[in-house]
Image 1: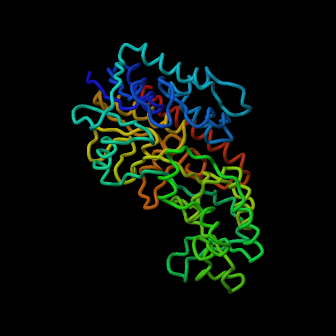
Image 2: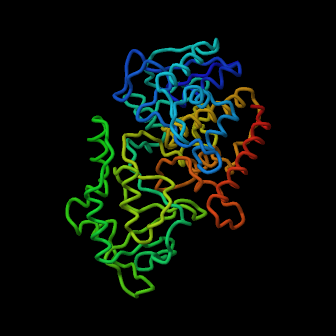
Image 3: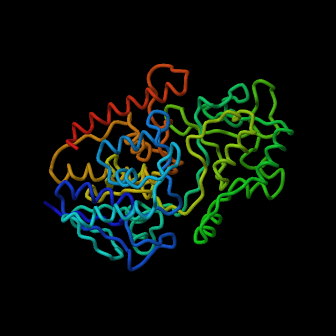
Length: 435
């Protein structure tokens, strides 16, 4: 059976390598550790957690992150297995002892006779056989340039994402559909503010707490895209001539332009998720909810993804990747991890696991179907590979799952039904793929 080169021993690379190895595939696992470290990494072990020891919620029926972890448990995920064995008390969240977590992953990989670990910096994408690129958000140097070439120049150096909100949580009594000067199909949702409402929002925004960035991130991130709170600091009216410009947006309830207006842009084809246009931000998640809720239409907003700004190399997956994470231009090359545009620890590991599952079938010469988008696993893959001119990374959330096909007003019940549907489909996938 042909060897597979897995480049990067982070969460995605470790997950992919382990799945292949335990199924009899010889794997060459490459990483720059321990001879060299990125600015964010310290440990010699694989699967190192950098920013947090939390893998988010463990609630299977009420939280998409918890549901995703359960899907991965059922598929035999090494990362979730390690997390469960190294869990520390954290309420309803799955938090881990970082050292124990990485040590467990490293031990499982190095003990497997099908894994050959090679501490080497790879500068070129292998042209022979199968390879998996899982080098993470800090990919740099010659390999970065190589990836830029094969991804048709569509390679981003940082992630500056605005929050995404559930359509059901928008207060439409304080919002209206329409495009500027009625030029378009009326797809935007407009959230008007009076002068008093805007001034209260503005004061809260400029004084809000911001998330910390690593030193190596600060210059690249802020030169590339200005956070909404930095823009606001240039003067009280700056936003009213920028992302909150009310010109051309006539409120049908008043017949006038508002003092300031936030526009929300549809994020998915079904219209269940909306993006806050121009609201890239570095505020902490808690502050985003507090401050943005001062906009009347968003007073009860449910955030499917908060805004983030950090260094995060990622390809334009809708343009270059297939739903099985293989490169359209070269199907023998797979990508996994944050470099694909999935956002978060568990999501990164998930992409590595799915890559391993599909690649094993490819190696065996067996046909296969990708996992249903009724699962979080499938919905993430669909999101990052569906045409989107404003593509930004995405985390696990119920908003990316297709609607149930019936109206369920109770939010908790709707999530429970989606979770049950998801687990039913993941079990079918496991049976079909002989996982």
